[in-house]
Image (cartoon, rainbow, N blue to C red; front, top):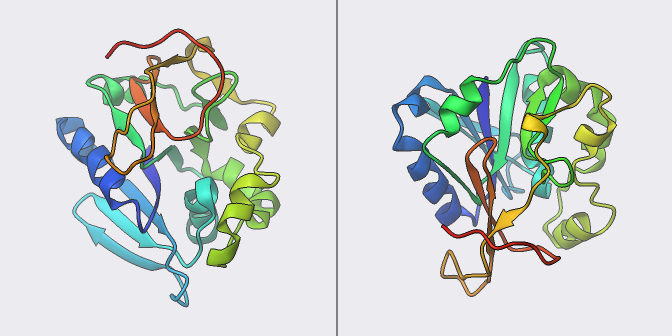
Length: 218
């Protein structure tokens, strides 16, 4: 399995924070890490730069949560045996993340979500399920900076691939929501909650949320 990080060219602070949390663990170097960086509209095509076990892909589109999945579709469609754990730059891994990831059985798996109700497109995708959803993903491809807000807010269809995959797996049958109160985590003036997913030992530092839930104490 490969790990794919979805990010944007202005998200360097969050990306470095996530990578630092991963590099604390020796298992990090056992994985191929693919970082898909959106927002390089001026590029005629994808620019691929490998550095040790990390491959940075500079994408000529910014398709919000779907940037990385579209990139995998357009660059890796022939790798039909591949699996990816897909997450966003605004995440943080815990001490048991890699062990939990390694324990997941990929046999006959098409996709896996981390929460029954809202996975934020985070989870495992096979290349086969990505290819199967080619029309949907390409409909989410945004090549114009002025349309980013439109793509994020109008008919966004979060978790679409998970929710339309008849053989999707829910990791450990988890449907909880553990979070902190809002805090300016990145010191950018944007309040965020920190969600925790114990089934994969993953934190999501989230700017958009709603509802009343029990508070997580870190």
